[in-house]
Amino acid sequence: MKYSLLYIALLIFIILGSSCRKDFNYQASTGNLSFSKDTIYLDTVFASLSSSTYGFKVYNKSNSDVEIPTIKLAKGLKSNYRLNVDGLSGKSFSNIPLFAKDSLYIFIEITPITEDSDDNEFLDTDAILFDTGMYEQSVALVTLIKDAVFLYPALLPNGNSQTIVLESDTNGVAIRSEGFELTEEQLHFTNNKPYVIYGYALVPKNKTLQMDPGTRVHFHENSGILVQKEGTLLINGAVSASSTLLEKEVIFEGDRLEPTYSNIPGQWGTIWIAEGSINNTINHATIKNATIGLIVEGMNNLTAPTLTLQNSQIYNSQQLNLLAIHAKMEVSNSVIANAGHTSVHLNKGGAYSFKHNTIANYWASGFRTGVALKIDNLATTEDNTLKEANFINCIIDGNNTHELQLLASPSSTFQFKFTNCLLKFATMDGTNEFYDFENDTYYSSIILNGATNFQNPFKNGFRLTNTSAALNNAEILTAQEIPFDIHGNDRTNAPDIGAHEYVLNN
Image (cartoon, rainbow, N blue to C red; front, side, top):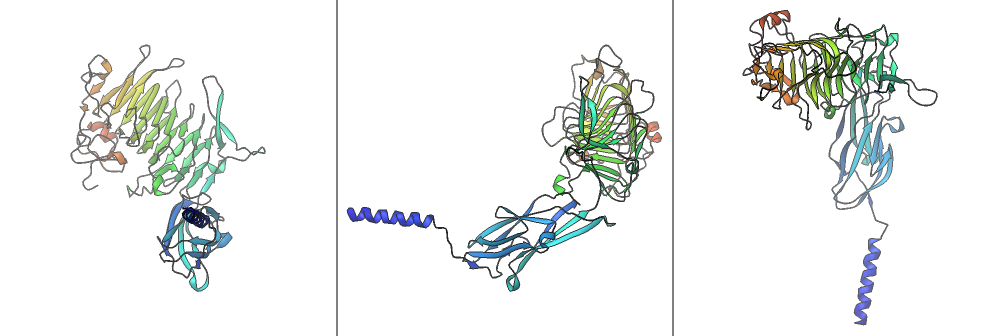
């Protein structure tokens, strides 16, 4: 028994000693490493902005533990890439162990820093080198870099960024955000290079921000455009030859260009047309992935349109696509669809004309409580008259049973009418006169709960198919007034309801 106990104690000592062993015998790698990829293509990024993180695996398929003498970037310290190897960040690493039949993760990012160039796009290439000399192996790195015009707040002497007043709270206290006033030289956006905006770009009083066809505007997180009192926004997009490339459309989106960000809502703030701004026009624009796509604040007199919106798309906003607050608007040939709450909210009255629009909500990024279209005149401290809200040849649709909400104040005017509209609304008990779809004061020639049969509404595909109830049911005089659809297709013969005219094989 004595010897047995001694043997057991000795065995435990040997096991514990070996488990705490710090030294291993590695063989130097001899060019026999394998890689999950031989070229890493990082998605397109803007100059000066960091990419997402990409990774690949290095395999030691041999039966021996090896040590990789060096892992480094070919361009060394001049490289715009950076690596993370075994939890350490840098551009060069030495003596990296890799066990037999094991693998090692390497992660790559890039922050391209470039000098001013006339080239709008260029490739930034490098390579990760494993070992040197006759045993050297490599993995290529390739990234497409887009040059851009960067607009951002100035840095103040105290180290903080410049701010502007967005609005005032209910107590009259100014709500500020990082932002800056556009200078005279910055008030004309062209299609030469994309624009990347940090913070809110303010259109000053008595100035006009003009955008040419094909302009691309990208916003950083919590950024946007604010058109202040007596300022003007003039977006001059045009019909594009390609409905995919939209080469002449003016497009507003976030500043992350990777495909994984192409349909993520809430990447940036909003385009805000403030109370008192004048003569605003948006034509052939796409506004996507915002928090609130477009805010339009009107004046009490409701004489001239606060905004004329034509041939445009606003979709995939985290909260609302369009919020109009006691505004006067003329909207035609536009698709306003898919928002986390309500797609279109006409708030606190106003005066609105909607002709040949598709207003829908097939939100697929979570639960929503809002509808496709909400109209109210609820306000206690200001004029809340809903002078008019006329919808002609419009689609109001979605994947809920009710896609229209009407909230009227009994003390103020609430005038609206739907004519030749396709409207999604389940049957009600008839106690609310505003939902009496037989009342021709409010409804005329509507198609209630007809099948829209869009091509792919959950992915913002709102073209009509040949089985849609919207086909050939538009009011002809309004169609002749707006003879071409959002893509320039003729609608004067047997016109369809909505922004899109059905075209075979389109």
